[in-house]
Amino acid sequence: MKPGSIEETAVSECRKEKVLSAADCPSRLLLDQIADKWSVLILASLCDGPLRFNAIKRRIEGVTQKALTQTLRRLERNGILERRVIAESPISVEYEITPLGRTLNRPCQALHAWTQAHLAEVERAQAQFDKRAKSR
Picture 1 (cartoon, helix red, strand yellow):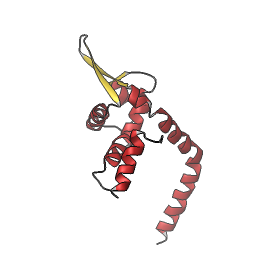
Picture 2: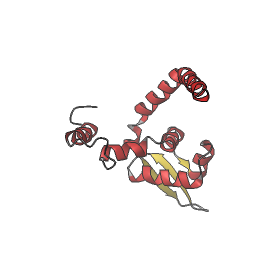
Picture 3: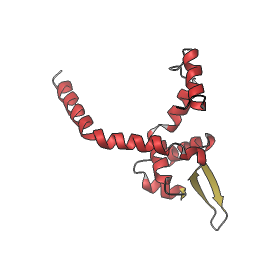
Picture 4: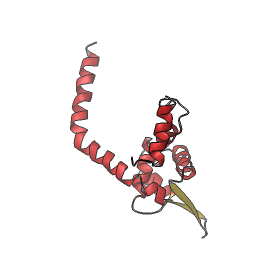
């Protein structure tokens, strides 16, 4: 975080008021919305350019229409995505990452790199935990 940035200001305000963990902390609310599994996968799907709703749905195995719709709306409301109506027959809609949303590229890439680098270690930890849980 850069000194004086929006992120630093939001975090320091929450810390100052000792509410960083409070459910209504603005930073926590935003983090909840942009870091959920569907948001991250949607952003990854759109990193190469705009896509229509059904193209996004096809790229993200397991997402329901309802979950995709809700997540796209949240990302649009937060200025992360832009929704554009294409006036052709039939009318269609496509979604594109905004300049603000593009600022999430590096953090998302870092998260992906961490996942790839540590997947085997996490899987070992899960197996050990599951083994201990069975013997309880």
